[in-house]
Image (cartoon, rainbow over all chains, first blue to last red; front, side, top):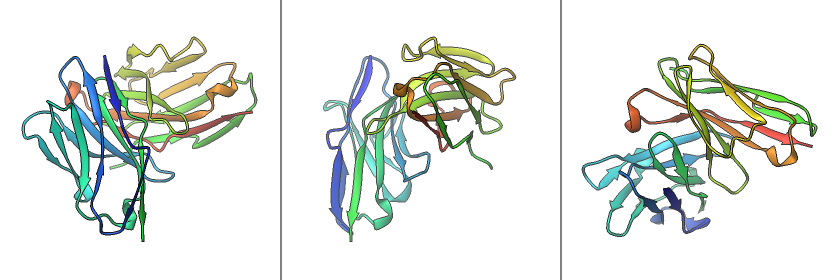
Length: 110
Length: 115
């Protein structure tokens, strides 16, 4: 069985501050991990994905995530956020079908 | 490059009515997925197709729900005898047939409200 837990439902952060959005997964099979972003009234957009290889994955818009097998985590980070990063962020695990977390709402405060 | 499109974007219906949604995937993508997203939740997998074959269905997909992809291109999701609990955003995604490693690209969704 596969599942994802996003520990924070809402994360407020000031503009230009760093941010970390937490994701823990559970999987009994090979792990493929994803972060998607959903802007208001838009579809889900892939930020980054981990399939294999280097545990530090860089994505679009300056985001990066680190796969930690021992802690079963795949936290998303950005060193300096912008107002435009305000959105809902979803972590997902899977292959043929995705198992999504419940999402983290990131609000960037001017 | 046109992305995944879904129609309609919004649908309001009365309880007991049937509704049908359409998804047009990215043209060279063989795989097509349907998800449902309710308020405050992440998307939940419903079903997926490879070409015209429906390969997997979630137990969330009750017998009131049916999905088709007759020619391996666009897909339709029909909900019969809608209930208020069916109110949600219905998302479609597509990917190439790379197996597990291909990225899923999502459409903007169809928001259903059952009164």
